[in-house]
Length: 410
Image 1 (cartoon, rainbow, N blue to C red):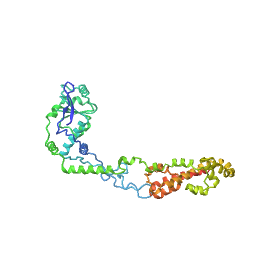
Image 2 (cartoon, rainbow, N blue to C red; image 1 turned 90 degrees about the vertical axis):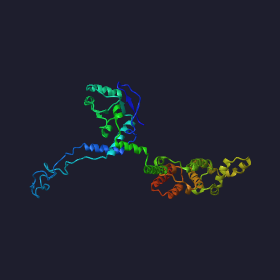
Image 3 (cartoon, helix red, strand yellow; image 1 turned 90 degrees about the horizontal axis):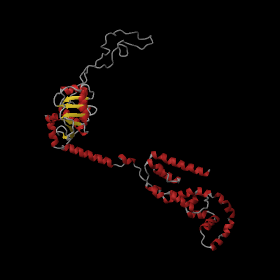
Image 4 (cartoon, rainbow, N blue to C red; image 1 turned 45 degrees about the vertical axis):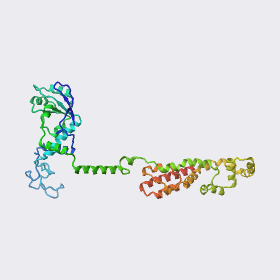
């Protein structure tokens, strides 16, 4: 039940009063409001606009000049639409703009307009708006006490001439007897000031009574089924993957936590420090031992393993033989560090099955591909991915790796 502020005759505020349910039922039908206001504004048009076409303008029966030889465009009459003093193309014709709105639709629009103002606390009830003499200043003071600012519509109990004369000089105030206001008047005003006697004495019409009876019967079964079906459809749409805000969420790539190439690179750096002579030697640790020279193998063993003095003495002779190489080894120490990345990529390639990696969205491809340092892995993922929009991400990563490799060589 909607309520409105109530003010007594002396201007003191009283207890909020309940509004009658037959008029303030809480239903706002925007489509009906638009239809009724559009018809109201259309009915205000006089429809007397008129103009003459080229056939209605007097004169112009003779050709103004010859067809050819003048250098000008050909003309048949001086009353054509492009000539000064000629007719008008598609001129307005006097006709009626009147639109007819059904009685029940008008009643529904009136209730919707009242409910719209009542829901915004824009309806004010007063005891009386009687003025002994026309006085605009007095009306302004009354509206200031009521808190009605801007455009105000005063609905009185019958015709009150003094109140009407007091409001004529105020551009934002309109006075109407209750029941004679239009839907446009209600929505035009920011505040509705209604006399309580007018609202109490008003009786619902037959149309309003039928509306009250239909509301008492509840919602029809057909509308209930339609509403339930629409709610079910909206739930299905909301449950779809990627619907609404779900599509904007950045999902974590599961393989990111499993790969961790940076940690494996650190481990590979702490492993044998001997310089690999070919990329194939980085596939397995056993291949490194078979293809590398025994002198190079003995050097990391002697540095990493200091178990006993006997073993160190036994391996002292190969150390002495490899002294010329050892002198050059300190100068070329950065070379193994630069080529540690292929090792790490090889280890990641052996540990990771590229065919089982889950491909993320295109928007997350740059972050995903940054975890791979091996060109062969990226090419394998590129062959798996059939999305055209993702190919640019693969190519960008490949060029980045090739550029970094060239920089290291230089």
